[in-house]
Image (cartoon, rainbow, N blue to C red; front, side, top):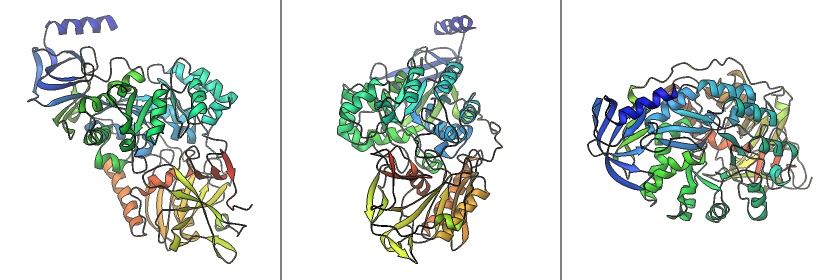
Length: 571
């Protein structure tokens, strides 16, 4: 079959019969030669065969538009969009996205191997290529309860069974496990030694960074400052500049490190992109737009969203427009603003592609909570101050604050005047009854509560609010709908959004999910919430692998020490 296909392409390149498509007169942003030049784009069987004039079954006039390769996202959790893989692909493709490197870490922490199989099956035949990295940390830490455990033998099994779909091991978040040579971590790294191994090393530097790199991870998308980026580039890491949703903006800071000699080792990634951000601002096209506006030369910016990523992940003949490459390309009315005129996947115009309306079958209710009672939310007064999670707008990193409590009837409670909200994380996978309690500063709530089962990394039920009654009402609504998001105030549910796929995603039409999220955000706005993407911010307050202070179902986590700490400073 391969020889027959190759013979046909070789013949087409030499005018032995018409090609399928010819896009005439474009200005090609050539990421291989580093220039912009005139070209025609000839396509046969979904593959580019040449830049010359060919007889073609279909001819499209490019009219001097710029042509760039289809864009590649080097690191994304599709679950964070709240959309099933099919719905995500249909939403992202018109923004020029041709391929994504998906880390199904979120659904794996809920369902284990079954969740990974769901993502692989649901994305298998999509026109937009979904490559799946093998989750490395399920559970992410020993300080939270996940729905499953994946071991080194699971890594070996998946990488051997899906060699064409799974390029390697996803972000190794357990960087202490690498540094201190944890046996299970070492076995996972060994099982992936012939594959790409993605890193996750926020603020790691010096000799500890050296040790981490020697363990195998060769990229990092958690870099947040210029000095950190420079050190990681100097030490051979592939720098992934993250510009995602409302809580992940690193581009402006990290772009200052780039020069004409180092960008081949840099890619753009989105990491987490909620559906409203995806539909309002775009996907990789939005990152390109920002990078060019910040002063990055357009050719270089396009390379960082296409060929650089393809080469890092060893994707054969992807990420460029040239003979032999898959015919993924985007026509632009304007290069500087990345104004898209048309997108092609394997030589087909995206507007003519039908993305699957259905989805892989998913019927399981994954929400199992044992202790959703008023007593579970009570915090007796303790000694000293409260350890408080300080929210940093636009970042997933938090501050570790200490604040005096507000006490009523011997119980520590939320304090509107100081923007001090109460928090709880209920274990929702195994019905253990675990509840972690804490406080956060920076949500801006004046009243009410919000709750959701999107809570990185173990995706237990997280809730924050200004009263126990409203926190309980919101949490009970999330339980009732089988996972999702909810807002409550004065004992009533103001809005909710069901996410029936593992409590993380919906296979409903994009417009329906978007409308539901809009209702959620509108309800929160009436309660005083001041962050741009409310649930995206809440979801990261339990992320125990990103500094500084986080809350899981087991309690407060000091991420720098990588250990649980008491809520009260003098306990």
